[in-house]
Length: 264
Ligand code: URA
Ligand code: SF4
View 1 (spheres, rainbow, N blue to C red):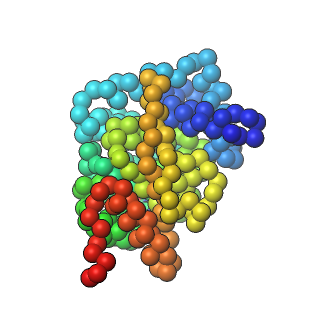
View 2: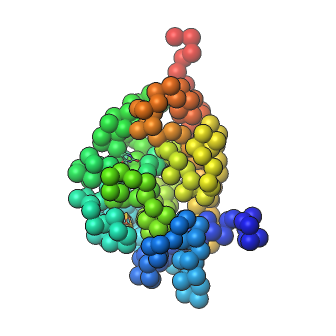
View 3: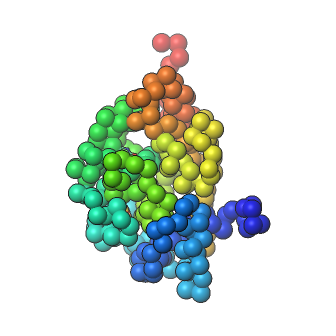
């Protein structure tokens, strides 16, 4: 429950339905809002009366997963100007990997190299992420890697609340299409956004959380979500790599992947 007595779920469902704003061209979030929650509430007000059904129905229900992801990217993300981050970008960074991935990694936002190449996690933290995925016995091609915001925040600052609100409908649509078994969030902003909490990453990591994904027809499903440290943080704080590895092994176990032989 929130402080005003509203059940927390309503804002989660609301946030996921925000895609109807974007795809149906309703007005943008005011830029001065301080927190995601405030921004969501403001955007909720713009929807009341307008209804939230039918959200991106054409994207969600036609074609295979690869085609639907491509349509989302080409028709919506690539030319998106829904927030100020479009101003400084060289490329949008939709995400990459298998449309059938059982596991999706969600980072924060593109950095310098990602913006240049239009691909997620290709810089130094990307190298570490590739090794983390490899340690799980998987390849980048088998998982899907994306971010909360699809355009690079200037000087790699954290995405601002209204930017997250503007962009997160794309992430939710990606998750609806891919329909993964497990989501791993990398770093605090991704975990806080998807779990709608202000708890820090140190408190959130190390355990599975339930992420509720809502669908336009009113149904929803829960997906196991495990927050872990961002690879950029691990590069600065290698002493925490062991904890991240513990997290990834929990994911392997949940997915039924073979764990490394402890005796070796
Ligand atoms: N950091 C992120 O959060 N995402 C990227 O794609 C690259 C670096
Ligand atoms: Fe659009 Fe997201 Fe880029 Fe903002 S960050 S312009 S919402 S794609």
